[in-house]
Length: 331
Image (tube, rainbow, N blue to C red; front, side, top):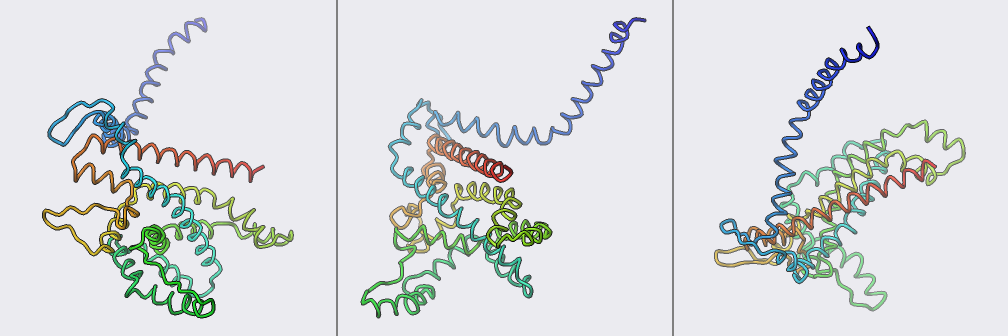
């Protein structure tokens, strides 16, 4: 029997084996594929479809590109987007740096390390609504202990020496200080970032530090050349998830604004989010207001797609940046 005839007799069996192998792979992938299709692909396509309609959950009226054009003239959406990007640019780096600093500090604590870890992690376990309400009262300009401490310990002596009349910020009642107040709230509950970075730091081999010390490397050189490259994947994870969470920032901002304003939703009364003067209005808040308060589902679909596109852009940018950093360190 020739080699050609042998190949011909083996090919049907090999083809059946390949088909069975592909079916087994598809069978194992099917739970993920079904979930992806029903919970990601279909909602994304449906959102894009509804963006070309005026849709209020009852009637569906085609409007072409009107919803997309309206976004370019929607001042509230622009302000919400700028506020959200401010939080991404300021809050996320500060949370990562602050969490890294606390984690680095805890690695050098000899006694009471477990207690300190619990103290720093506990605020993260507090429900977001309760944490926001408590923080607004702590930063209350009239009765809050934080402002009393700032006025009595810091600004009081400075005003006496310099002859000035500085006062503590109004925080959530001042448009210039409301976002920094939200940033302080985020730093207070930095336990999630701290705990994963602490685990990464404790996983760095001590032999690397010992070898670097023998070679004469200082503390900064050890941190720059050993610690950062080793924990880089965890830093990337913290940065990417932090950006995605901040782009969806909703609960703390809306609760802080409502509590600081002293107003509540009553029957027949509509309170727009963003107190004071739209400074705490985030993009998800405006999306929720358009979709579930005003029932402009078509325009809310446009906002959803824009938020998704921004999230993808930041994610790809961060992944590329961290990859470039890792390549530079390796070279």
